[in-house]
Length: 359
Image (cartoon, rainbow, N blue to C red; front, side, top):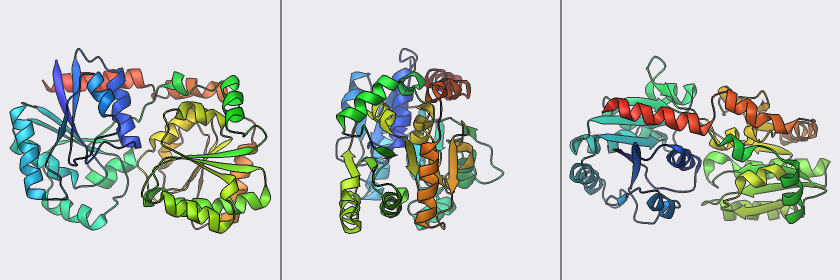
């Protein structure tokens, strides 16, 4: 059995972490086992599940306290546990820092996996790209994410953000039940799933919702997720007078069921790689309205509409209401996604075979 070390800054409840965990759940763990390394002291969202699946969790010396000690800590963990394959998931070129540490610890096969088309800290990204870059295997969630991190002419492998298509398949009885439980039976429901951080553009989302409710007083926005900007967004909803039209549900484990209740999915992000949640929404048959900062290749089903953030809130409102009012046979979309290569079982096996090819 091969043990692969996956490196994150922290194992939060985000799309990238869900991507890895979904592959972990569906791969043959008698062939490949995943272990995880983070550079924070706090427990991760998936720690108990990782341990139940046979994975190990390492906490390197916290990066924010001392980068040099963090570097040597990562190298020591790799060396003492004899990891040959290290897979770093990243949104910027700073991921090379951890791969350098892993190489110092003796890792033979280094993988840098791009999950975004812009970095949260562009200055750090640019410096890292100049000073830290090393030879490695290059993965990306999309063509745009790969070209952004590795260069337009670079060779890289696209690993699709696959999902459990059966899990997200639409069922009318589930929709009726969820809408009843959340008092949404007669409402037009707009869904959003994402961390409350700058990237997801939640303040603008609240402003769009203000314009939407001006046209349809029966609209409700359901927000799933937590983050540093959640309180600010709740205050903005109050300020705009739409607090009664917004439900903040926090962290949830029932997202596949919640998506059944939505009429349209709204994602006005400032940047994205290939949003995991957008794959899930399409597998559920949801019409989606997203910003033009989301890569076009995210439109797997033809059910995604793109809007420029320069457009007015009124224009966004019109598009959202029109998209949600369109009659769609949602039950067919899980099949479409599976046939488009986004089935998790098949992709987990392909990743398993790739790791085995390195040995």
